[in-house]
Image (tube, each protein chain N blue to C red):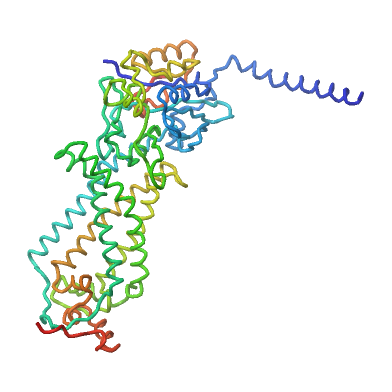
Length: 330
Length: 198
């Protein structure tokens, strides 16, 4: 009992001593400028271009007090992205119109043979059209976010434009899932035929089958198609990843990360749309016999001979009767 | 016409969070949304400062510029408001806002963003009347009753000032002159492109 009291006294004495030593410099400080040690907004912004602190709310994204970088993102969204998207999309459209007027539809030189060969089976076509349908709706609803208020809003009521944009947002968010699945399937399904090789260099040098009148040999996928393939796979992956960051913001990203994701998403999407316009052109009015590959899945043998000679030879070698079949006489 | 602004005197703010609570209570702000918050910088270190932050009602507001449906507008008092009937909850105003003011209720699947909510400077919504529907969407319109924002009115140390920009800047300057120091009007340069000498 006595020892206990003794220890308590000693501890008490220490506590008083400690309090005195702490209090002395504190009282000495009272005369100095309390701002001498204080943080200033200017200094913090100069160091990090962002001021972050501690908050008591559970939503930790709010701990960013100030991020003037939002102004730069605004500049990107309102000016830079609009120019990139407008130039690439309108530019490609203009080029396609000029090309169509000068070159016209690329005909099957040998004419239709009347015999067809299976190019894409039902599953491949399903995956293609699922991804394509999603892509078109995603592209239109995305363009609406960037250009809608400049193009659509002046010609309709604010309520109608909001209704369109609201539905566009729902479609944009939900169709991202089938689009992503489609892109993954496209990658897995056709990666075998799309590894670039020497033949593609030769194909590009000879202007493919579309620029000149030449028909450089190609396997199942020629150089141009391989380019489209990789644009879809890499571009699709980029828009999907950045898109999900925007859909589920702040899981592992701060506001700066979200801004960067939107910048990548916007630029890649604009270039993606421009590239797909070229793809749609060649697949429809640009080339005779091309649409059937994704339409019925059966292409004319002469078309295959001109554009995919090596592939045709390979298919014929597999047992021609099973693959190539004569069309019934009309 | 007055140009309404907020000014937080960081040398006075004691991080009591009364402004946060007052705001939530006055407007019955939905769960998970904070129109105002107090951020403490250099917490626990010498020179620690707390700043109460909400929408600063910027001049040439970035949120309004990036909004894809143009749902923002600035009132004659310089207050930046938006229409929740037009907002589509895209999140862009949050990316552009230098002060993290826009908040989104998590409604719908995948916690997708609902209509944006932010500080209204206690000025209600596009419709100035104090109806039940307006209250549910935007909270009270104190300005129409001749009152200033409740957060500043409640501030126990009068750190948070709200009102005509010229008047609150004058009050702050007088304070700085009298006490001999001041860490400046936080956010003013970013929001209004002007500073008050500290």
